[in-house]
Image 1 (cartoon, helix red, strand yellow):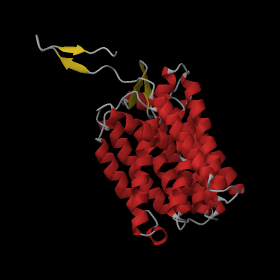
Image 2 (cartoon, one colour):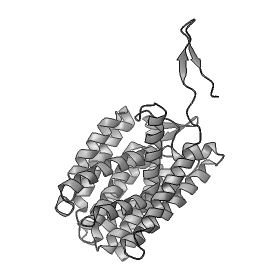
Image 3 (cartoon, one colour):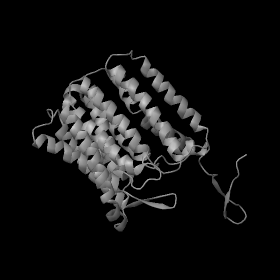
Image 4 (spheres, helix red, strand yellow):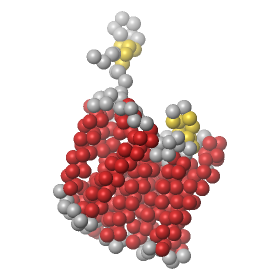
Length: 339
């Protein structure tokens, strides 16, 4: 208990300090993201990655942390994903490259002995989806950090129920580091996670959930892990579904995520992030209670149903511009008005 509190407090403080210290170098190196006519440096993700790894490794080196429980392998794989994300922040890699690299890292750490090969491969696919989903949340101030904190705490609780102290400790440190990052990322954001931070955080959370649920039934586990990451899952379903229906490439970026649509309904940036963070907290609590056996697994259907209702409701919010057509007279592109 004492180690957990001290490690979390250290991670929070160090991340807040390091994210601020790396801000100026990131601006000079043009490691930035453009948000609403302002440059936001991507120093937050690097700070979260470095501090999380440093605190966990230091705890093991000083022999004050709980047993590893596979955390070393997860940290190494997450470091590889973070490096891949950092390359993406600098050179903008294709999403298929990010997905392939993440899939290889996940395949190296999934506990096939407990899940079986078939379920393990499904877990790898789910991890890839969650990693790219977390990356997609980083477009809005405070959103990826808030959802990440909630999800990490939820996975930590599930791991603690299974007496997987190493995984629980790793998740607690990550949640604290993301909290320190949020001090600079709340609207108006002064730093962002970037692919480096969002992908590695999503990877650790997703793999931690797989470890916590390994050995349980596939159907029930799917419900629990979805509840733990309900906002990410809903965002992925909404974006992929609506892009396909609109005839757009699913790999093409656009202002079509949950937060974008909430903003179009009139919510402020902090309001949208707070609302989605509250939704993530609600789903997480149901997932943890169901995992611990405190409530029936039927409650998981309410989370899935609620997510589908939100997806359907927000899918009605127009976000795509009118399609272009070609004039038969001059061949110039014209905008076709709706209605």
